Image (cartoon, rainbow over all chains, first blue to last red; front, side, top):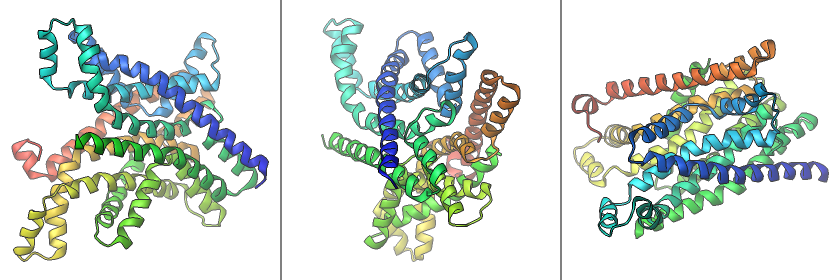
Length: 212
Length: 205
């Protein structure tokens, strides 16, 4: 393996990181909105949110990628691979984040809601000052856990939209050198380097939460 | 093809995963540590890379495997690690007293494991197993990347003939959503068949 090939692999590693972070930011924001919709007091808002969640969770990410990539094409817009990949991953991650977070919001004891209401807080105030701070604490371990899923799922981004990330670059290297064990092993190792610390962190936070 | 692929790897993944979970909870560190490493490594790397590694890797050292077999092996390895983690939670949730009581009744070791530990453990974690296997069904689409003609692979070919990319993906999306409902329903039925308590009382354990 030459240093150029290693650099190419690391370049893919960088692509994976960029894609993961962007997905987390955008998917997290959309997921947050959907999770708030899921606990809304209007039934039709709740229905929209649950339909979104269950619908998106039934779709393979690969299909979503295709829709995000070819969909805008109909109106003559060609998206850059990165944009299409982030778009697909955003909708995908949002569905799972919304599902996780609505559970966390609901797991805040009901008495907290009632107490906040008795103090004369508005619904927005209650959510912002009382419920969300507590829900965030509960939500940290599963959120970090799902970030592992995001990092792993970015590997699919290369298949439809052709975004150059770790899996894509390692495949190209393998195609030209025919050393699959070396390159895919290295790629696996690089993924492991990102994912394992996150998994451990998630587990630690969870056990700390239980202790309290 | 998609269903065949998922069914085969679900079955084999369940058996292998349970085996790994058994090793993982064993008191002998010689077994539990390798099992833990296996689970952690597989769970923290993407399926696509695992499939590439296995299928292209085996081809490069001259093992001539049909592509379908390679795909099933890759999926089995992947899902067995997840199953092992779920089953471990189930096995650990079984009360120690149950096992001691079973020993006192003179059951053999195998009987204790299968009837007293494994059966209720599986029942307890059955919902998580089902969602894992639905995810597996969706994940089979990834294996089109190594040249399997499952639903997604075929769709890709249709696209290259018709150039109607978006429409093909819409149809695919609907098909996968329908499939995931069917698979979930089938697993729920299977659950009712296998666990008599669930069937008669309709309450979770």
